[in-house]
Image 1 (cartoon, rainbow, N blue to C red):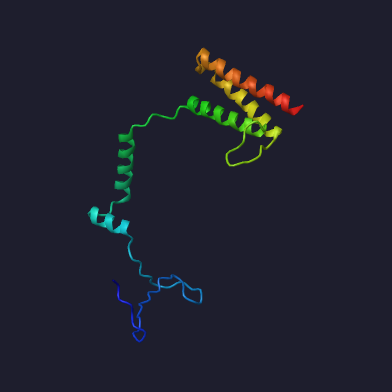
Image 2: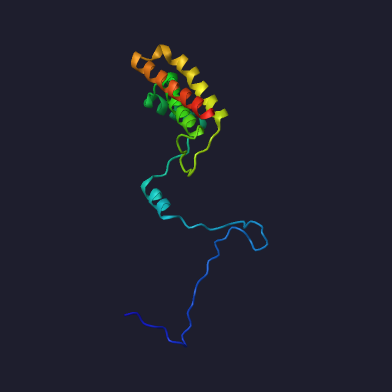
Length: 154
């Protein structure tokens, strides 16, 4: 059981002011910061490294990039991703699907038309890179979007 302090005993507290600003609003010159538990673990785990010069840092960065050996970005894959993103946006702007976090549909047919037209443009650029199934899929998507746009805009 914990002892209860007697009424005549005084409790003492030590107060450490860790604010970085003086009461008048000016910055304190030196503020002691206690390291966090994560910082203490990092310090214990990592031995000190001598500071590298700019040339050494650049060389290390180039080596890391070569080691990663990443392929160049595939524009056609990015365009395919954009088609999906624009299609989702067009459905939302036509009020057919709810946008994430929304409770009511939002209609903006001007932006929906731009999204649909952009999908058609991108599909034209992707035509040579798609197989027959991919072409049918994107044509079907554009057709569905256009039919729904006409139906909603009337």
